[in-house]
Image (tube, rainbow, N blue to C red; front, side, top):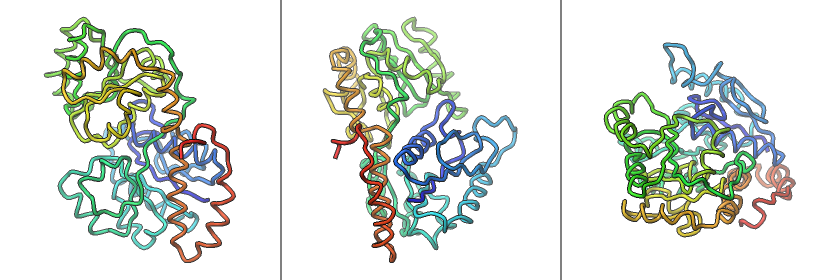
Length: 370
């Protein structure tokens, strides 16, 4: 199958530091190549990929030192390049929210769009009502709630390459918080949980410009005044195995409808349980009492974090391999691609040619998942 992947340009593919969507695109693209498909990635030139790369910008936007940049112009250039090649692909898979809708309306039947963000914002419903011809993929069932009547084709949970993470059979006696310093991520809750347990907490987090006031006025005073808390800063993929694998538990104390939360499955890949507030996608990702604990209150979170070390870390890693490997994600997307092809006039012969010969490829990590 000939597949195009269209990524946002804010981070490299995969990101050098913090970044969610671009990391998912990197994992999916490489997994599809490994399964025998012809994949083209439209991304910035600093992408690292096993697919054919079409570079549309010299580097990703966030770490570009240029003082003046236009993210809209960069994405329009990318969409123009993809549109020139639209007939070269069986499926064009967008990860750019809705920005491509006006450009690709005439060929919407060969596109899929994965929505990676929250959908409960003003103006968003009108867009999906205006362009209902575009098939959409949710990254959790909970993500769909603000748009129940949109043109949903499937829910596909994210996946990560298992070889990227080192399993840790034993923790080192601290709690971990990994992600972004922002009010909805609730690092203040993480600090309170650790303080009540008298346990060390390591915080590896990015501080966006938009959240600097929150960091300086709310979180930094809690960090500076507490000997239990260590602020590590932003870390890259090569540091995550040691950081997550050494923790008794990852704290995921969110206070917003998180559409997925990659850090949860990153922790599971290291064998580390997750203590997550029951919000957004967390009940779909965490198996309560098996791969972590779902909680509703701070008191429950404290109790759960205190007993997280009792969970079987080997079993947690096994659940990651079964449910959240990159290959598991790619196979689920291939099923959706096949459904898309089957609806076209030339589908009977074409689906037989491009889908069926590739299905027998062995995938031990996903062999018993379906």
